[in-house]
Image (cartoon, rainbow, N blue to C red; front, side, top):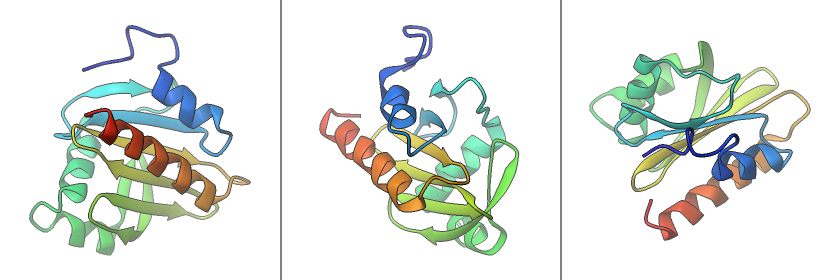
Length: 136
């Protein structure tokens, strides 16, 4: 699945970035093996995608490792201060990431300094709920 080639700015990313609560975003497969859509300035490496997928799937010791050592997204390390059933929240100073798993995808939203973490969380979680209802 990929929205990237079909739209200049894929609708799910437009929802996230257009909200004003997220400045960069990506949607990857739940397996962590492909990018469905991404902001042009937000590149998640293949090994980061796989690790993110393992963390949200609670595979092996991935979640414990994220809690202890943080999670890497787009070349940056974030302290994983909350790792739950479908969500991972990470922070680096005044910036952070919100990662949420749906049935088939993982949404990664980044917020910059000056954006509120709670608003970014609500925005990413709302898109995840919508995608789950739509079968994704």
